Structure formats: structure tokens, C-alpha cells
Length: 94
Figure 1: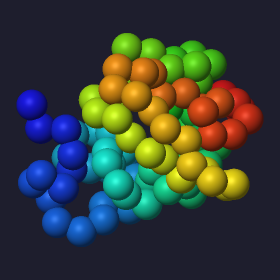
Figure 2 (figure 1 turned 60 degrees about the vertical axis):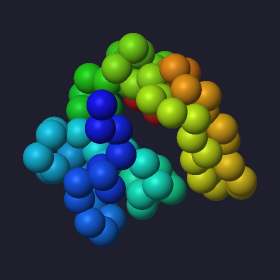
Figure 3 (figure 1 turned 90 degrees about the vertical axis):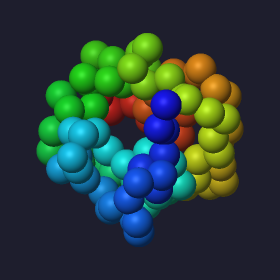
């Protein structure tokens, strides 16, 4: 199974849902380093599709591998299989 965008795509794909697969870039990207709040505010239903109605995470948002994500004051570690939720890094606004 291909998990990281960088397996096939070169460079950072930015903060978008306009990629060929209809989801945000996965892996060590600008998206995972923050800055996606504007996207979430403009189209919260796009987030809810995978991260759950209230941004609590769902089976579709489970991390495929262990990840360390940046947040405003440090980092957060997400273990393989753990749902990625809004509250891992910041207040839930969905």
C-alpha cells in the first residue's frame, strides 16, 4: 500500500484538497506542519468526511504509520492506527 505522497509525487503539494486523490497531502508536508486552519474554516465538511463529524477522528483518519506532527508549541506523536483528530494539536473548531 502506498501511504506517503512522496512515494510518487515530488516536492511539497501545499495546503490543498485539490490533489488527484481528493485528500490532503499525507506525510511530512506543509499540511501536517500547520496552516490548514483556513482550509478547515472555509470547508469544514471536507474535514468531517475523514476526521469525523466533530473532528474527533474516524477509521478513515487513522495514521498508517507512526507520525510526529508539528503544532504551535512543539510536536505531537500519533501512533500507527490512532485516529488523527483536531484536538491532538489544537482546540476543536468543527
